[in-house]
Each structure stands twice: as C-alpha cells, then as structure tokens.
Image 1 (cartoon, rainbow, N blue to C red):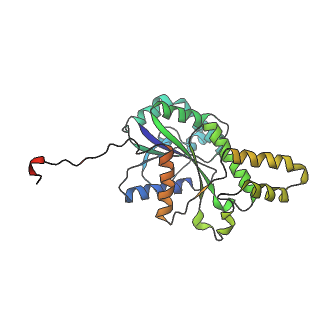
Image 2: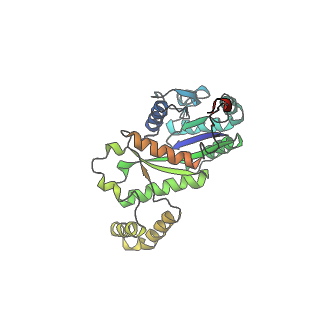
Image 3: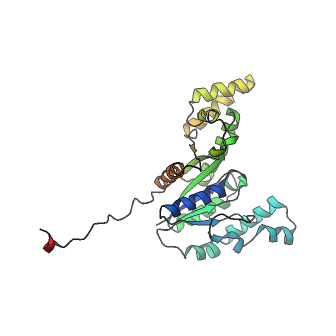
Length: 267
C-alpha cells in the first residue's frame, strides 16, 4: 500500500513552500518522501521533483499553441492530465514501491478542487493503485483577520472536502509572518456562538438566518479546526505531519522488529 498527500489550497497559500519544508524535515530525520509537481505553470522548485506534469504538458506550450489565457490554459492542461491517467500517470507510479510516500503539489485554481472533476478522478486513480490519500488544505493565516474571511475560508475548504471525499487536514500556513498571533487564536478552535455573534455584528439583520445556517454547517462538519503551521519550528512541521500520517494510517502496518539472539550464548 502506498501513501499520498494531495496539497491543495488557493493560489499564494504556501503550498510549494510547505512541500519544500516538508522535504527538508523528512530528509533531516531520515525519512524518504517523493514530491510530484502537478502545476503545469510552475518554474522554480526548492525541492527535488520526483516527476513533473510538465513532462506531459506545460502551460507555456498550451498558451502559445492554442492562444489560451493563463486560467483557460491551465484547465486545458489538467484535463489533458485527466485523459492520460491510465497511461502517463500509471507509468510514472510504477517507479515507486508499495510503501512509498508521495506528496502532490497542486495548482492553486480553486475550481480544480471545488467543482471540476479533474482532481477527483486523479484521486480515484490513486486509490485504484492502492494508495491511501489525504487532502491537505492550506489557507494563508494572514487571510484570517475577521470572522467573515474565516467563514469564507471554511466554505472553500468544505467544498474541497465534499468534492474529493478524502480524509482532510486543514492548515493555517505562514504563521511565521503573523505579527499579532492573538488575532488568529480566536479562529483556531472557536466556539460556534462566538462565530455567530461576530458574524451578526458585521452583517445586516436580514442575514441572521443565513449566518446561523453557515455556522451550524461549519460546526457540523468540524471545519472550525485549523492546525497552525510555523515553518521556523521543526516541532510544528512534525506535529502537522503526524496528523496527516494518522489520517492515511502511515506506519500502522509496519512490522515489529525483534532482535535475534543466540540462546547458546545466554548465560
């Protein structure tokens, strides 16, 4: 059985930086992971790329040959990937052993993990290849400045969770850039009544029922829990990785190692 993280989130949320930091952390502790680039527009990487969607198709070539814009070109690239799951992706995955750990660095276009079926079909293909997959959703902590933005972030994450149907870990990225962490603490594990009160204060009275329904939805799906990630701290990276490993049951089927001994030499 293989293991995989699908790293998703809005553009600029720190997905590639997360992958780079995760690789360095695992390298330091003697653990092997393989990071795959699924962004056809990516150019520079701070981590070794195990395999790259640009070997199949690149955004630059699509824009030049078909005259598409950046967003239309990226969607064309991802649909081309979807058409080649049984060929290109299967061939690439054959280079890895059953217990290998893969991390897929995805593009930031939100439609890819909210309503377009490309990543859903990609995930289903991984599952058919006997991979346990976890969705890792990154949200910029500097985005969480008030309750309205928090609810917006939760709705986007919930949309991805429903679309992909995966175990899901939500991460507040870029915590090392937050100047006043007290502004974030209220949203790490907030009480539903606190959220509703704050939302009602910021919205017109006619939205009271909608606010209540949104808060109940967020609370019911346990989407009010985000894990803060400070890349300056190894302990923070270690904790996030442990949460993800638990979701995909990594290491649970490891064999117990028993030290051999010679009974004849046992006094």
